[in-house]
Image 1 (cartoon, protein in one colour):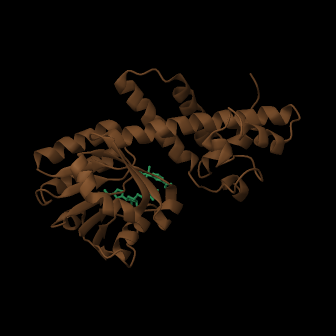
Image 2: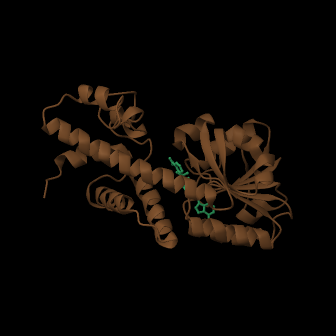
Image 3: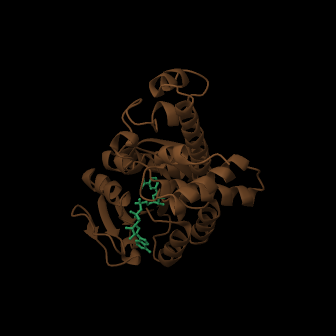
Length: 290
Ligand code: NAD
């Protein structure tokens, strides 16, 4: 396929490389990042979109996705597909879908989980919203960039699934870290705490797979000075998107709201920026009970 790839940063570059390695003709554009040698450089978003069967976005946020979508829509081939793999707000995903429909372009929102490691190894998970027949047609592309893709429903559903998942993740990570801080202060050994909780009703992905305590459980960023992994900044971004969506949907999410405030304080005033989101454990430990 002729693929246009826009946004070749930490995630986009390895995803585009994997598509090129699999034999697709990939033309890429990024307004700052260097284009990997496997990708044919395009002069602009428009030139990348011109004649492409599929255009893929891996951009920072919804506003940029919308602006780039508006820019390229008139030049995209009728019947071609725009896939936005960026994590963006649900409202922007739905807006881009509307614009695409008006121009006879097909749109899928397909945010990912798996981070830079997953992007490099082609083992991302895609959460896909849009028309089922278009998704079915493009499964081979998702299979190159990822190990799993889940069709979630109409346009915007991929983003909805992603932020609901990450709201659970933010909340359970904070709860897990609070429990470790309490266990420490009660004199409970961390290994004993892990052995009990990871096989009991308090278990979760945050505890069992991504344990925030150094030297406990499977290898995770806590064993590597809390280098990301999944950064606290991106967790804050996703929690904010969850609260924006909850606001628009009129849904009460008090724990999501508190988790957003906690990550905001950690990132903006607690030296958390640039660290893995599980680095909130040592920060919580030093917090004073009010
Ligand atoms: P990044 O900042 O490394 O890459 C984004 C790229 O988009 C940059 O290179 C930037 O120059 C480019 N860009 C911005 N505006 C542009 C424009 N108008 N035209 C062309 N290029 C433009 O970010 P990333 O880590 O690759 O993340 C990309 C997306 O993936 C984000 O939405 C993020 O939330 C999501 N995501 C990231 C991770 C992760 O672990 N990094 C995990 C899951 C999802």
